[in-house]
Length: 241
Image (cartoon, rainbow, N blue to C red; front, side):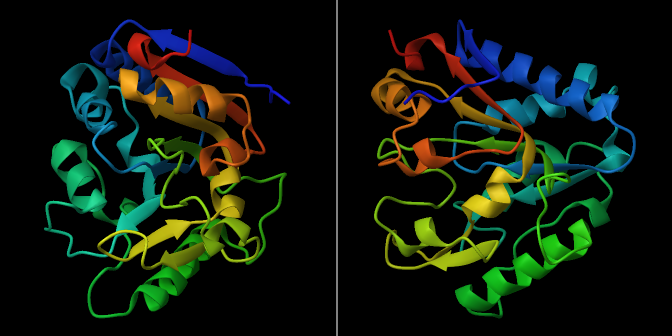
């Protein structure tokens, strides 16, 4: 069964997508009073979008002091490692915009085990949320940005892994799937979003985007069910025909 999406937008190029989605995020942040929580995607696809947030024409309008930044997943490497999702976001915009240091909520990846890091990040999320249980009436995130891998994974929720069945914990360690351990948010945390947007570019993503957008639950990305609005933002080459 095809799931309903609030919005499916096709952009002529990856560059146009980066510009338009940065403006979309800025507008959402400006229209809400009080704290605004964003859950960031890692990987290479969103980098240009993040760089646009730091561009003067966007940064000058962005309510940096009210926006809090979280991560949907992280590779268990030091923050200065080239593969770190935190480092990518820091280099792309967090270090180039007037972001209060206390608004950056990175996952700890040194000095503790991956399991301990997942527990610590769940505690961070609960501290920000102000409760130990999520309620549909009050989402954890205002915006969650997600990518999609060629195998249909999103965040670090990979096909066939135990993390897909985790419905109580908000964050878990993922070990043995990739060369490095990872920390990922689970479906309950990711789905607790007012607006959740998948961002995909490139022809190689076309088939998997079609399956996930149709709600194919055999793909981790296809099983995402936000309590708020679901968006698919794709460039022309990633858009199913």
